Length: 479
Image (tube, rainbow, N blue to C red; front, side):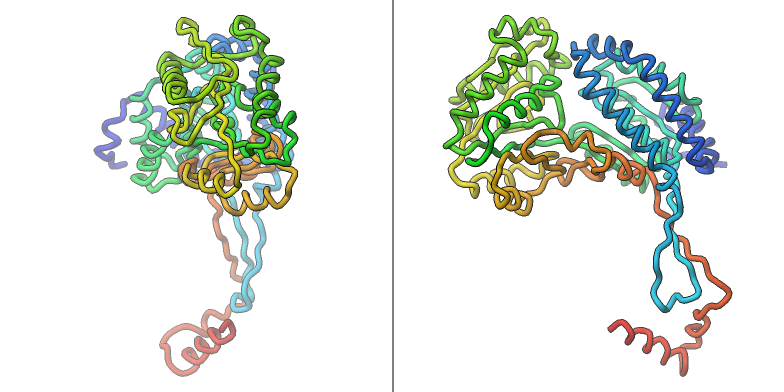
């Protein structure tokens, strides 16, 4: 009979029942091969393609996300992940032969990937489909039973996901539960074999504490103030256009969005002019046109709206200048795509991750200043460098730390399944996408096969005479 801990006893009965069903199934799933796992993922892909318009409707209901952004930032990354897994899963699942030292002559050593067991995926609201389904693809590919919880802030997308996953997976293989913070807290009391969380540092710490209590694995995808550096050699027109695109995608509610821009003083005015022009091309020449455009989404809820408005008001009061934008409309939770100049490290907008459509621009004279400020801001999830000086790029790569870096563009690393995606330090722990995702949800099991001939008996006790001399000789071989 299984002993139930006090902590587990606090879990509501329905959640415990969901977990128990998954746990009962996990060993059968562990025995599945690539063909069975890929068949499940192929069904997921087919239903996604069939219901893509329903997904777009759900995301528009939640925060007026434009259909083109749904395709580019929710559906496309999942399709890329599925295609990559389909191509490589068979090879990833094969035991990998490794070498062995001479002392282990007569043995064969291998690494066997095995599923971790029952895993929990806690997804955020900003990309509520992509950031739940992409790790789910990796977890299923690795052979796990999975429990998913979408964010309560995007109820339309959560309902879509619940129906989609019910139609693809048996409930004892992949389950989805809805609810708010109280459900999340209850889930953290259950002994999952791996916790996967995307969100903010405050909740991330609680997830890590839960993983520590259960001695389980954990992947944390957090965020941070991802800087952009535009040096004197940069193509300013290209930089302005790409930065504006990456920043105002999803109304700035992106964990790898450019958070703020450091620009060399010699290029500041040209960059600001280019940003204003790009913003007008993308969203309209007037404030009325930008507010009416179907190509710009809204803040997810009143709390997010008020927080970003406060950052805007306090920054302007502190001396920041509005180059473009600045308009707000509380009833529709609209904050205009806004570019701010004359920003300093002491401005309110520099105190926290913005996670909204405000783009502060700071000038610099020396790269030393930028390096110092980037280091002081912790280790961001992303860093973007616009430069045609290779020495500058290399210096920034060596003298700063970030989860990922893109040179002369923004956010592109997130859609390459060949690259690991993850943070470092304050911006996260662990990585996923492609093979990194398969490994995140797998345990690499070391296996040694002893042949007919073994030399271990030469080291058996009693440790006198020949055994002692052989032990010393073996050590000398590697001195």
